[in-house]
Image (cartoon, rainbow, N blue to C red; front, side):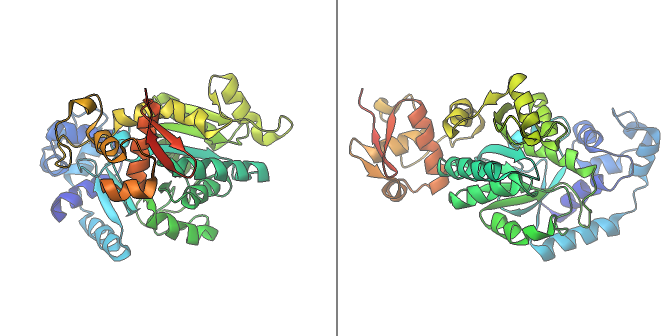
Length: 372
């Protein structure tokens, strides 16, 4: 994308009185941010959610030096600016009502990620941290990308569990990318950016204000196929994330805890209200795996696959794996070599095949085609 295009997308964030919904409506009406800035005031103020005052701010916009500094800072810090019209913008996030026009990204966003949010109390118990790390490690080993908020407690445990499982993880910040919060997570920030991504919608220099975290939570749930809540009090921010997830049509899961602990009152209430009780990672996988193929875009063609009617009911990537597998047990490393797929993509495909009853996993990460 040309730098001028990014400038106009960024400029939407710096217009006084213009929020994400107004930005979305402007782009839908005029076709691009640039066209919106070049439109007459009278036409701008006819756009839904745009007041006359905001329309004048758009027409008279003069904060281009601020936009230029934002772009220079992004380049200096190695931060990517992903606009809502980019093929790299997460498709699930585009489905929420007030998606941000630009997200700041440190690391790699993959639109093929099978994503699951895991959130909970900042003052987590030993049980909560241990359970979170174990679940997230196991989910990561199955190809699931863990999304959380890099806060103290459950969030940090979720990211560490995914990293321990050699998987991908995404941290969503409630600050600017250059404002580390909490400060003790500096090393975790660096590790996440190397095996996944750190993202934020907030401009550089944005401090950790209380109002930013509910906004951050809608992105955590918006990026994910479902949300797992571990240890949440009755007024926990994690319950906000769960409610947002329901509003966005996502699955909600809750891990039960000690009935005498105030830190589990919120999760138990979620279960009473219909959240799925989680005792193992299988409880989660059986709900979200059917969504994985639906939300993942597959290539229409693949030159490694010849026409073979035996595999006609499978996706292209599944055909590749089935043909490489044959009827002899193969270790996942051998399958990587035989298919050319990276480990996370391969594990995701194998999960789908297991769900369809076509592949059986044997001990030691070995797989075999299931005999009928």
